[in-house]
Image 1: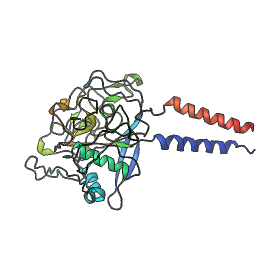
Image 2: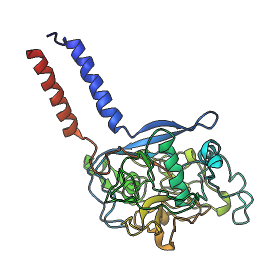
Image 3: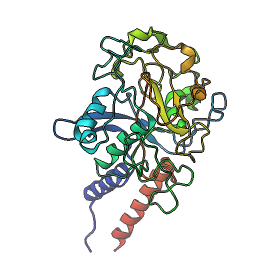
Length: 350
């Protein structure tokens, strides 16, 4: 029987490694959504360090431990993305998502507030979930959230044991979905965890800049250790790509600019489709304290049907197996390598 030579084996092995691992577990990168003239790109940042410890100094206590690698949107979802969702799908299917008018609404009256690159505010949790479902289904994937009625702002139903992709630990999210609203832990880790802290052992900070001191307040920009907060309401939010400096993982706008919805219910159980959801991250017209890991912004009661001109959201990307099986770390990769080498040696002996 013909055997592989060294060159062919290396090509075969690298092909398996790329196709077998990358396609199954990749959660970061630039993804294009929409069709025809309604396309847009969404950039996902890899949040690795699977199995990190939880933070026991913030709120809730504990928070931030995630057993798998995942991706999270580098920027908040923009108004342009929602407008293109509407043009591509929402309007024709009676699922159009409305945005808060920051320019002519008496509450705001912000010149330039409706710029297409500003964060998509005025979107309810339910509408954000509808948008996220479309990201999945429009790219051939499975819906994350179980909508059983037709209104764009109707509450979801819980996934149940008879549903494919049911995950008993999170009845909100279908485990077959790739694009989801970030859970409290996923968002918290992306904001406050620094894998290089404590000499590479990892650790948490009080603010999303990798420090226990507040970033410098700015109206717009990308400077290191800056965030869009402490401004007058009439200043309005910055464009999503100009929402201050990045977190240690490289995610922009987790502090300030627009407050963001999270997938998780306030009590963390995710067992009541109408219960209050978590919002977090501060906003452009609030003080630094609203960005802290200790600040619990959910005391105001954020029902999934509610919307606000200061609240937006971002999207996370997860492996379809992330709900129950951690992403493969070094051990998993080495195991794969070992199996491949065993297969190769068996072929050599024949």
